[in-house]
Image 1 (tube, helix red, strand yellow):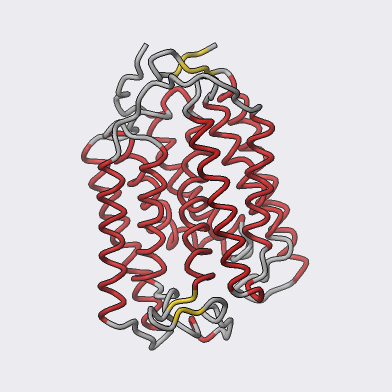
Image 2: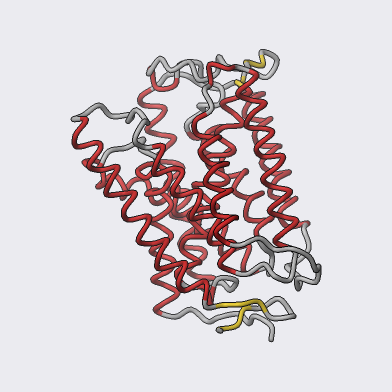
Length: 336
């Protein structure tokens, strides 16, 4: 039984709206960058974060591709946000916050920090885009591999995304006089195009045919949690050591995930478990994360508890729904 394209429904539209707001909630609030009192800022953050996540998900699912394409486009999104919009990849004193983000593993020839660049690729590719999409798909697992909108919806989201990027860029330019060089912009643009083309050069999703051990979803979720905590807790003061740790985590985690996900025993709940582990890693890290906006420590911690609790509720609901589905021999999903 093959997965068929699902026509847009009220439930699918609800999933789109949910993802539109889940992405910025994960990226900024669950992480702990922004406190609870700034929740209204979702209206400004959602077009870029949520628009990007929805646009990536819909484009990949409409073309019949899978998670490798989502993650490649997630990496392109990371470069668009941090290279073009905020320009944090090149700015030694981003928004005059004196955080010295580029100092660890600085690469003078490119004008970037090795650790910060790799960290941002991890943060946006795996969390802002990957975790957000997987969490929401887990809430509607029977439609996880089908597009949720039509062409008109895609166009509307694309416009919202462009407006979000423009608004973020305008905010950065107003708050900070720093401008990356033309060569730096050109370099980021070329890499973005390569990532986008690579995402669509990958073959369409095929049936899982490889036999072998498929770990328990509890194990895959736990591994994602540990990997996420290592990425988030690695101190940038280690310099090239911090860069190496992130690189090793990626070099182990990504190939292992690809290896096991190609096996017959891999189910939708396995994919969801990876997002669950990543989300919990973010939620736990928030308790030691210094918010970008100063405020009452008590209120900040209350917000951390609320966002982590909300994530756990989503995880429990998504896990129950995803665990009801299995994978058919042809690669589609079936209710069990």
